Image (tube, helix red, strand yellow):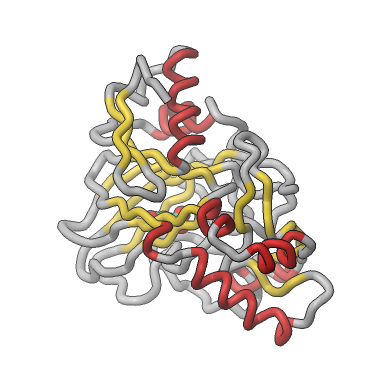
Length: 281
Ligand code: SIN
């Protein structure tokens, strides 16, 4: 792809590119927007450095790609219900938000198109985010496995992340609700066709997928565990080292991500907006 309005520099062989030559705080003209959109489709996750964004500018950038979701279980920041805080305080020693490989909100009927994460405060080291290319995860399976998975659906729910048995008050600066409704189940194809690229990708993850539809959990687990491990093989990934004012925008339809929790004693504070998606097919 030839770009005229932005520069696009891949950061890894599998996915991920850093975009420069654009100020996301300003309204994007249609041609620049079209190139950023294309860069997202080509690279699956795109990064920007040195962006100074107010919450309104952050939301305006996300809105160029679609409506913004209000998270079902995570409270928004003051005055901006569409922005969730992804914050780990220096004194927190426990788990971090997003510290398991996953795609966002796949328990929904229409899981997110993507998320735009903006770094307000980053630790002096660590706190990188890893991303994994789910097209490659699918394409590298054997023909036999592809044929079997092509006929399968998987059951997703929010129960493990936001169900009533979830440990309360896990995060100091993120308000997370734990509710009975998180047990509701949603069925999606295991192999998803991307609505824009037309490519097939694996669409199961260890946070929200419970089992294959029509199979028991015990029957499903061995194959799901294989798929979870396979889908994040190192050669399918990239790793983004954050700095203050960096932005990451991932295509949630064909990637998984994982927030590394290796910076205890330091604060990491991000804001996330989530762009609405459509029903997987
Ligand atoms: C998330 O899963 O949305 C958080 C990712 C991160 O903090 O790097």
